[in-house]
Image (cartoon, rainbow, N blue to C red):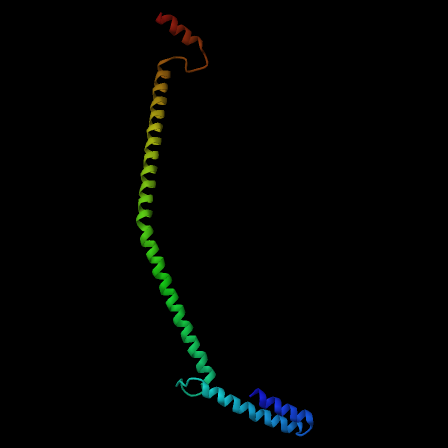
Length: 147
């Protein structure tokens, strides 16, 4: 088809045909080229108003859509498989973390209870002594009386 166009343009350049005649020939050549292009495409029945280029585009979109669907299914299966492999390890790790946390909390609770108990004993022993106020003389007197 390129050869025919070049021939028409050369005829125009040589002055053997007019510009209007060249335009008409090129237009006719273009229409026949489009007809050949359409004949080379697969024919599908997409209804009225669809030309061959639309059909070709719909076919490409359909293939693309199928490729996306296949990719998403494969990706989903891989993610699911990976999660199934990781899940037991994750559960074991979570259990270990919970056990360690419970142990630390128990140790803290014991230490806190011991501190509270010691404070209560100290307060009790301080009440038995009269030295609870700023006057230290009473403690000296109590100590002398005990001796």
